Image (cartoon, rainbow, N blue to C red; front, top):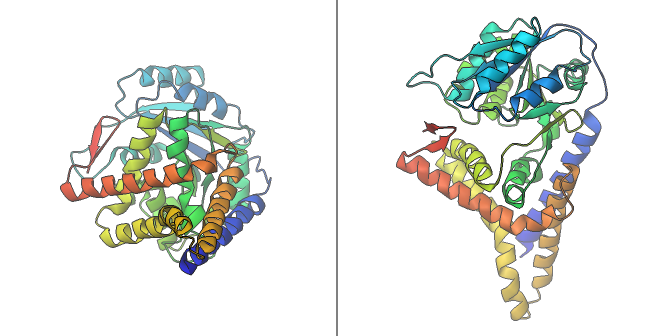
Length: 371
């Protein structure tokens, strides 16, 4: 049982260090205008979200920016909303119709992002999602901190709006990297591409770095294009930072349990494609050090086993690590108490994704099959 305790202690130290990094690294340094920023927004069936996103971006304190919005073959009226905003704000918003997705070689979002980048004029490219809402300083804050940290790519955690119990079971999975696996504070100083992380809700590039990696063509067949484009930036020798964006941007990623399950599941699927050893290692860590102590403890208590105390301390440390991470992200006080259910879901989605990889079935997202 000592191994449970050691693992839980490591998770707690990692969580504490990552929370400290997120709290201390991003400063309120605003740039009023040090170069044109092109804000790039891909849309596919986002009629419920895109107007709110555009309204928030039209109120930016930054002086020099343009907004390019691409309709990726939507079927719900998204184009009409984009077109209306472009007509009402000429010179600020440009509406683009996406080209048909090639039959092979590209997934939908990277294809849309690459088209947007081709039309962008800025020396900075800010890639964001249609379901985000931006504070008035989001662009200025990002450019200011990119320059302050002498970085070439900036991303971070935005504030997640979670509106249902089903979403609370699934969405916190996105924080598993900083709670149990990745030291965020090592990202800027390390040249190891695996020590990279980005979230597509907000990624700011210097144009030079973006062009050097070939843009989104470098991750054309990646579902988790955000994570892998960050790795390409690092691999090319550029500097990447991951900061706390919750005061600048918010997002409701998914509307309910089903959408959250499929949305997070598609990213797990992508991580495990052609990587069975990585799958085995990640699933084993979660099963052995997160889920197994909960299963072992009742038997230890029933047998009056003295090692139950170590298991209890391990579980308490694990819960503390998870609670610290979720509280820091602004989630409700009770959300960490769901961690047995949350991590069982992670394992189930991992096995489901691996099964779909092995069978060649792929996953469905926004009307497209991703294999």
